[in-house]
Image 1 (cartoon, rainbow, N blue to C red):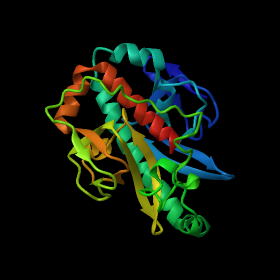
Image 2: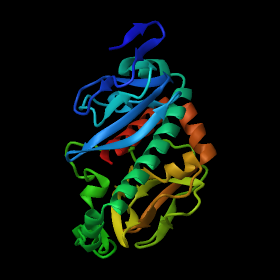
Image 3: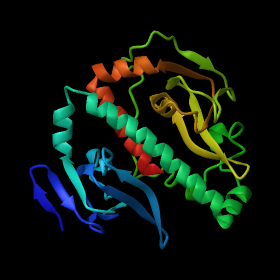
Length: 287
């Protein structure tokens, strides 16, 4: 049980804040203590991450009312500040500072989760063998460029075609403040490769882009993008190397956004900031 006061709620060691499959309308900020986030993989409990003071969790409840995708448990005496969905959006509508911090944290959370999934795949001989020997699943319109890429449900979670997961897209004519003209990439051109440094993100104006990584010598398709999608924001926000490879699967036009341009756009446009948060949370849910 928790003790509720003006400064948040206090949970003791072993207390469950919420369970996988439960419903919620709030996220939580850790004021002190530590939280374990886990989910079930079949019958096995998988610890996704451990969170400490200053971090947050349950943010997926900010964008929809779908059931929680993980369980949160207090690892010690922990004080949490609950932030209701309505309160979050009303308080940040005219001040995007909190949203910028949320975007940064979400990018790092996605990086950590992808790293964990990669570790789980590489440490599971049966799963690794399955991926290495699996047949590729190219779509008809992109058969040539994606013939060696496998969509591995067990690695990436629900596919991007999962009807329950709605992937938001920007209107193509969204007013991005950029002094860069659209750059053209032709079919099978690499936009960047896994491990490259990243100093820009990309908006797809026209065409299609595959995002993939390599596991057990096999190219694993992570996402297929089209006009209105964006990518490359992870390296831009975190400053880390690219965690995947991006390749054009048709003649494609991309708008490039630098780190400074991104910050300028997000600080000046709360609608855009909310959109980025929604996309990142949707991607995290889909992992």
